[in-house]
Length: 320
Image 1 (cartoon, rainbow, N blue to C red):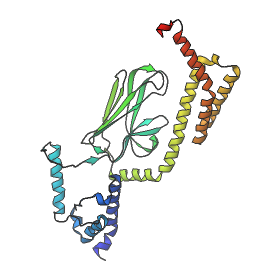
Image 2: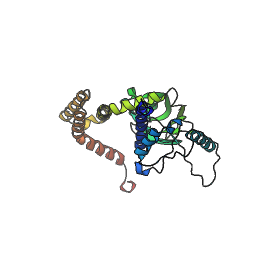
Image 3: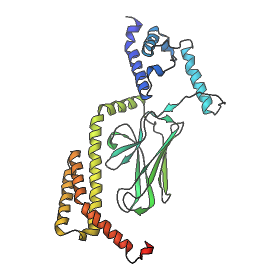
């Protein structure tokens, strides 16, 4: 049996990796200016032919494929040491292999830095509180491509404490993810009004091998549709909980604005939403949310009128 036949499956596997890299980089074959062969195995004629056929070009084989590795490492070391000169156009960048995100309400993952982002990099996103009077926020740092916390890799947890209590949704909490050239992740959470801040650092690649990355990516592709359906359901359930809390708070303060019949109707719609939110049909939850919104329009209008009257009470026209 010929060597080409024995190694055929390995060449195919390598080309699959090349195709994935091209797709992730959003590059077409005709956008590649040239291909440099790296590593001793590229001396085999059938490897060079396979690469040439895929890229529709003759790969560069005039450089020792073993020496290429050493030259690349030397150039990268020189750059990391800060030895660059005007006109240098070397660009040797590492990327984040798996997305980095944070846990949100409902056990969902909000991705802050997507996979294949070149490092060093930094990304920030603002979040808010879920309940009235909240003075702390738990930050759960996660790694992975899937939508649920339970299916991603937990990296770290910390808490942001000590900011002033506010109404739900009023706080502005900026969470910043920063990855340095060595792959060290620093996460900072800051409440923008008070300036209260907490942070933590973690090495995302610690204990994570190539096989783990491949497995996690494969699982994310295979379960993408199921994960998105589960995410849609949980998002509607979280929204239902938020609206129910807000509606109950409105009733606690201004139920006297409604007649007994109107109050009973709103409470019935709230109970209907609670019951439907326990199910698995996110479309039904969305419809129940809209029904409650329509049913509380009059209450919202009357509360607004009351607030305006209270604000204007005892003031002269020229004070308005």
